[in-house]
Image 1: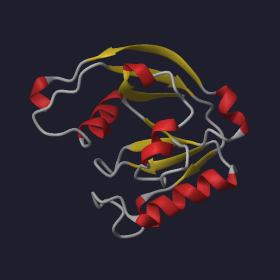
Image 2: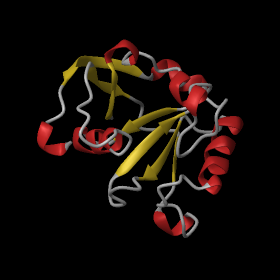
Image 3: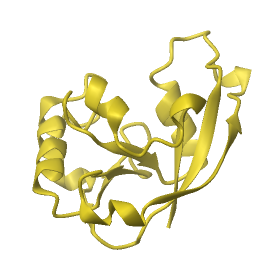
Length: 150
C-alpha cells in the first residue's frame, strides 16, 4: 500500500515521528512519537493546509510516497470515536487513544478517519513497532501549494 506525507523537505525522509513527539498532534501527546500519513496526495495537502496561517504560502515542502505493509492495521471509524472527535482543538480522548496505540505496539498502523473529510483516512505509524523496518520511502519530490488554496 502507498501512503503520502508532505512536510518541509528537510524532514521528508524522517519516519521516526520526531515532529509529532516534539509538538504533539491530534492523535498523540508531546513526548510520544508517531508518523502521520494520508491515504491520498489530496488528503495530505488538506492535512497540511489546516495547520498553515491564512495567506502564507508554505515554502520548501516535499511530498513522499511511503510504501507500507497491508497488515497489522488497527482500524477506527466514526462510530467508535467520541462525539467531539472532529473538534479543531484535538480532543484529549484522541490523544489517549493514540498514546495507548503507541504504548502497546500491537499494531504497526492505526487507520483513522480524517477530521477534515471523514470519509477519507489517515494512517498513523507506530515507529516503535517491529515492522517499522518494512516501511520505506519510495519517492520524494518538491511540492508547491497552489496559491488558490491559501
